[in-house]
Image (spheres, rainbow, N blue to C red):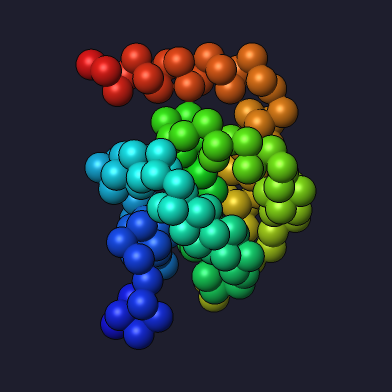
Length: 144
């Protein structure tokens, strides 16, 4: 319903679906569709804008943040090189998530998932050689 009310584009709807609060991760087929869309200039802007919005969520919406990081990790490796470029330019936004806190009603630290994922992503973005290798690896896998 929100998708219709807010008049989201196809690309934005896909990102919202991939980064929903559902207790399961985004499907690889959905992430592949989004990765392919990053090569379209308009869709790229919409995708990245929605991801940055999701990364700014907090508290009970911790899954939005975690899944946005998961999606970013995938897009950095398999999407347009502009994804990695934009992430490098905004690395501070990912770095600040290393302090993400959220303890759920059962006392479980759900923030740890976000903290770990953000550390992994920052490490990848700072290592150009590893990034190149990961992208080449992803391309080989995709071509199979």
